[in-house]
Length: 85
Image 1 (spheres, rainbow, N blue to C red):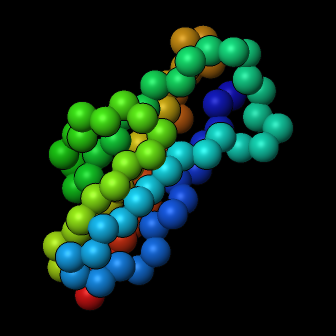
Image 2 (cartoon, one colour):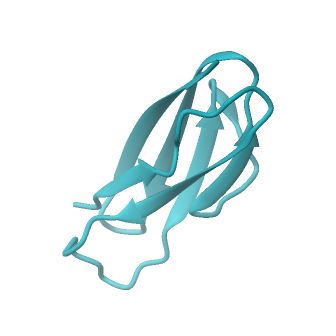
Image 3 (cartoon, rainbow, N blue to C red):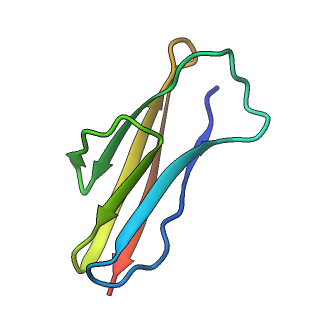
């Protein structure tokens, strides 16, 4: 099974740029397949396709999600919540 985690989301302040990235789990089986990434922020899909994004959030609570897919092992979805004060 493909395992991944979203990391790099601190507690940002209003207008601060925030980076988020996906890292596959250490020791996770990899069969050489290229990975595809589909990010959403607050339910809106980003046109990124890479393992890293950069976002500027408005005030409030935001959900960042990534869907990681490989050719054979399936799909992994991870979410993280960011609170901007």
